[in-house]
Length: 248
Image (tube, rainbow, N blue to C red; front, side, top):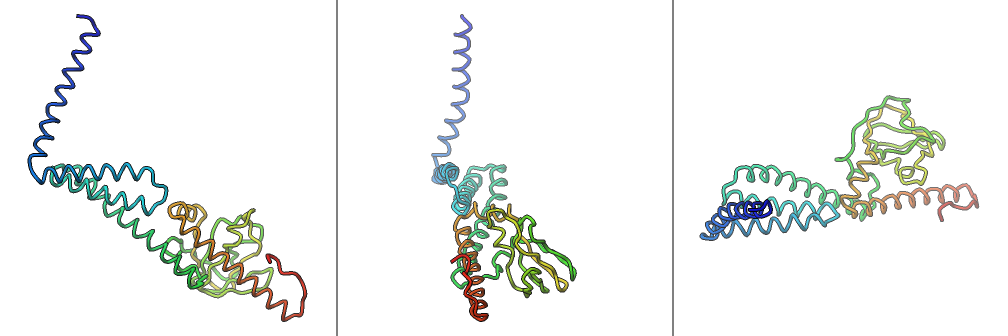
């Protein structure tokens, strides 16, 4: 017998050995209603996992992952598999939490945009706390704009224009979206301050996970720009200036 014939015979024997227990297991599973239900659950879960590989946004991806976890969890319970139960039992609450987190964020941003709320409170769960002393400089004119900020406590002065900002305000977002991403003003603490900050990488992650979030944030930034422009118009009108308003 040639080497080729020996290889073919070995492959046929292996296929038979693998097919026999698989066929027997499949026949056993199909013999009962619970077995059929378990196989259907696994099949649906497998389809959801395949579909999720083509999804580009996070909320649908998490929902598909939850469905897949449920399907495989049911299969692992009805067609006993401790490893499958443990794996998907751990992944299920994680995916549910992340899906709910992104849905809540989207709702917060939409509500803020609809109400014209420019405070940025809806970003607080994704921001890090930073404490500053009076006279500390948070950033200087010309610095790279790599964070957005929310003032929780204290007062901050923008030195070049002499304006003071009170607690409860989002700031630093204009330079964050500017082409050169450079600060146009210096922010100095006039009192002890507590600020929350979100870095560019985290913001971009939120945007790519849910483009609706990014669209609503751009809407809010545009609202802030319009509010700043209106304040400038009122000041110029009060001073009797006929200067052109930038951004018109």
